[in-house]
Amino acid sequence: MADNIDLNAVSGAFTRPLLNWYAANKRDLPWRQTNNPYLIWLSEIILQQTRIDQGMAYYQRFAETFPDVASLAGASENQVMKLWQGLGYYSRARNLHAAAKMVQSEFKGLFPDDYKQMIRLPGVGPYTAAAVVSIAYGKPHAVVDGNVYRLLSRWFGIATPIDSTAGQKKFSALASALIPSNTPGDFNQAMMDFGSMVCKPLAPLCNNCPLAAGCHAFKQQQISSYPAKAGKTKVRNRYLLYLIALDQHGNTFIRRRDGNDIWQGLHEFPMIEFEHPAMLENFSGSPDFIQFCQLQDTVITRVSDVNIHQLSHQKLHIVFVHAQMLEPKFQKDFQAIQMNELHQFALPRAITRYLENL
Image 1 (cartoon, rainbow, N blue to C red):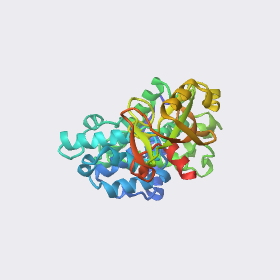
Image 2: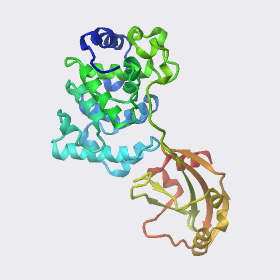
Image 3: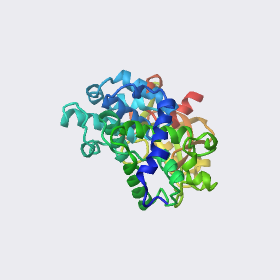
Image 4: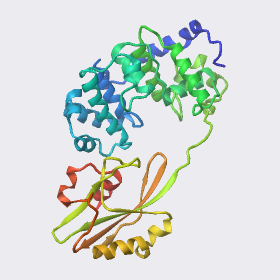
């Protein structure tokens, strides 16, 4: 139903009412009180896959600690990761830091106002690039996120799955056709706010919606049918054991995670990953753990229950084992620290939450 759209008709029934609603109901957010591209970019990166109520405190801490791109670019990785700790999706923090360095070195500390240059920055995809250049610089590039997919699919009656290549192209083209050249930033933010506050995933406010008269899904009583998805992402289960070991001097041992796995750049205790849940429940009989303990001369003092930590596509089953060790023989990439120094290092939320509950 989205083909052959009469943009003049849509403007009167969709665009103008949407902008009027936004003018009267937009959320009072600190990054909307400035046209500073650094602060707008910072908010967009933090709010990727994060609710506003959760991300607000992180935004404020980052903006206070690193008030400009030069201060962020000059920070250490551990400073950035520590400030990000608990927010999840840690690749965002690494990309945030890398992008700040790139802006500082390649763009002389000034965020580019060109979409093609903006999207070159690490961690900046089509959505973020469009948001920054439209809000900070008034460039007519449309954003497309979950809120936009939902609003457009319902209003126009588009059944093409949003997780398909065809769907992404169709919605991107539609949003680009709709965006007004004189107020692109307001239009993009209006779409996001309206999708979050009125055209919600569950229990949308259809009876009080200023766009209801032209909404296909509302008129056909098919709200729950939109947006359409082709399939669900399979969740992977993982079974981890962390050893919180203390030597005779009161030291514990941590290392920085590398590679392309979860929590890259964060620190962790020595860890064993098992293939099956039964192996985690009976870890003391595991050949890997037995060999590990023989090498370390380990006395177990406490074993936690299984802690569940849910990521977007992974479900982690974690057991924490506390132990006393006489002469630890960990690999060279581990460092010995006092337990009261742990707060200086960025740790995964799964670990900090366990420690906080001890």
